[in-house]
Image 1 (cartoon, one colour):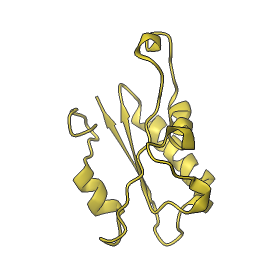
Image 2 (cartoon, one colour):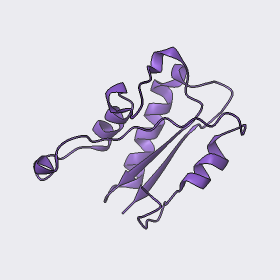
Image 3 (cartoon, helix red, strand yellow):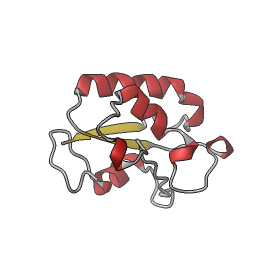
Image 4 (tube, helix red, strand yellow):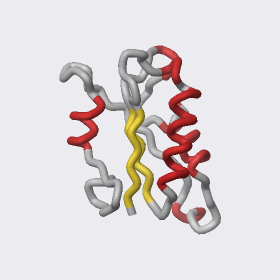
Length: 118
């Protein structure tokens, strides 16, 4: 992911683990990937930041068999790849933070981090 691609707001797994995980024993990462479509359709699909964000929080795109309604998220890191406006990503993350507030623990403020890589 961002370990391979340069970018002005680049992030990596070390930063995510240090900045988002409050206690060393609470470190179980749940990975999701969006968009999920075949490479043949890549030239025909144009997704917005909102659509990518919505897909990312969908349980269908989790790479583990986890039901989000069974627990709460501690923190999240979303890494966007491509030529995206950072203001658009920040606005979407702010909306997501307020929309999913009940799905996150309340004792970690500002628990969504975003990165943009080229």
